Length: 243
Length: 323
Image (cartoon, rainbow over all chains, first blue to last red; front, side, top):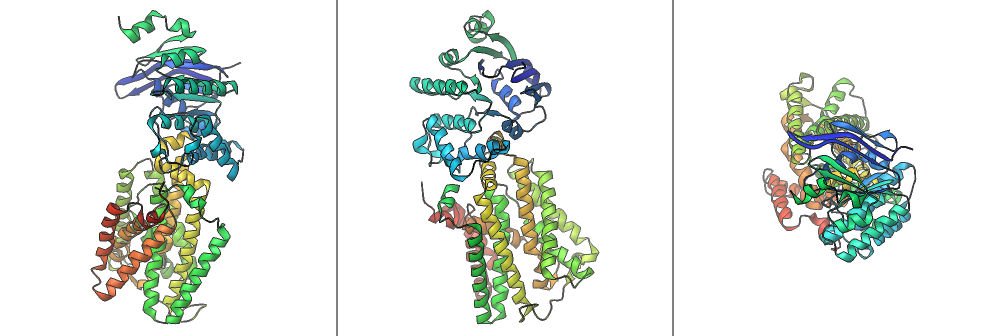
């Protein structure tokens, strides 16, 4: 059986700066993958190349057996690839419930389902409830704290009903209890069959969540495997702590 | 910015009752004009109605998707000059057909402009549209068939078809019809998935894409619709002014008013451009008659400055529920 996501030899440059080089990564259906790396190592760039926000110059990305290269981002979302943005990018003039309405209208309904009027609103509120924002469903994003905005990012990605969810640092700044909540939520989603890639700096969360761990350093993947082994890898330790 | 839910929370008028309501209002306004029976009323009413269409057209792109178009006069004049061309080739073509032709032409140009420029964001898009207005004006000025820089005369028929009376009454009636068409379109957009898609683009294009919104396709729909309505608003112009030259067809006044009116009225709802056009257009007409025909241009400018500072959500925003 082929992997759900196959990243093969992906490279990306910004002018003379090599952001990604020869990245190969496979994610099996139903897997929970942790992706870590120091700041600037290319984690978000990789996410952007996978999701179509950026175009990779080299290599190819396959999802569910099909090539994604050249497809615009919205087409990839419709095929079941959803991501949250590291810096929250809410729709500022829409209420929280309406923020989630967009992916339901444009990603879920585009797959041939036709969820209508009242049902959409109910679903938006249910998803907001899962991330603990139900009480603010009718508020605007500007009334949220930074932490709540991260939860909104995650909720909006969930609303697209993805096969693969990429959570890009949704936990930064969250309290211990909130981190536990989000981990539980992501594991619950995973239990429902959603493959999850978690990009995170909070090692406790990564270790608790991940079945497998990949490490990016300066645009290259330097380790990939069992989390407990990867964090003991001398090269990984050197990248994080220096010589 | 008030949210879409506000609008949807408004008494749930379906599209059909809303359309009928608008037609009724338009009919009422027209009968009042007939009752007053003074051709000035029709001349003034035509201008206000024309700005309702123009402002609504601008708002579909500028207000809903957040792409500020400065090239209004290009689309408006394409509509006007398509009528001049048709008038010269087949003068017997009825006005509504000329409007349809002008609308389709301007819509196609809108689509093309969108395709070429929508990869530009923010102010760069606006500058490109401004450049396009200059290009179209230069082309028309150098096109002898439509009179070039000298301009073209279009003879206004003496009496109105169907309804009788002066021809300007017919022009006013047709423009009222265009108002109904534009407003029904704008309001349907607001309440549909398209409206949510437009709002998502306005708020954050990358996030919209990531949520499955085909942003390029939606922006093309917006530019085509917006350009089309601008062309339709301009198509009857040659019959209204009877003499059209590039400097009047491409007058900056149209562009300034078409932007100022939605901003003053409020860009978040179909009602905004209507209120803006009635208030600003009405005031301009009043000042044109009572003070001077030059001072009226000042009105839009001064009001725009006041509103941008004091009430950035426009008049509609003042009445919307704060949250």
